[in-house]
Length: 254
Image 1 (tube, rainbow, N blue to C red):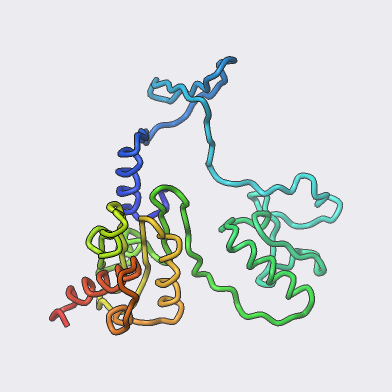
Image 2: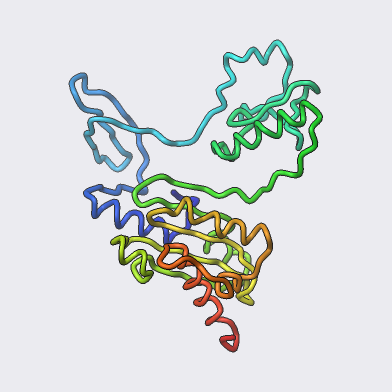
């Protein structure tokens, strides 16, 4: 979760541990072996050792191209073993197109499906617009994490910003549903107007993020969340609360 907003990760870990999980970070795994009976033994560089019934390794993806016969086609691959494509998803061979994990990041099902549609359209000569680079991320954990655009940390690296946040436990729907671990953040420029990113942790985060995505794509100011009416009670109302927080931090508080 190193690519997610730090506040989101902190809240996720808090809930994870409250549910009985144990977080062990900043370790390097040196050896993993099956004990031949019922346990996986994991040994780390600091001498610590852990036993578990299962071990899930989620350290990225590799393009599954070994059985595609690409050697016979002389297709150009990247240094990471991905199929190189142009903006039309055309490979180095004019009549061959590629999409999905085989062409590399972002390696998301949502992006891959859209790439597949565009590759098909381009192959058939059907005109399509440019694909947006603004792709939301979603982690389907408990609680969910989702974000689109900049995190607070990446935005601060570029200069001054204003961040507004809303906790789900202060939103009526959050109180009704008993959601205590939710948080929605809106990251704006130094003027508190332009939306740079939206970061959410909590139930429904992967659904809620699309409201912020559409606002960024339409270049709407953060005021749009205050000047318009949301269904009540809903978790989406967190956008209004977070936007009010941003507006209150503007110079002059206007």
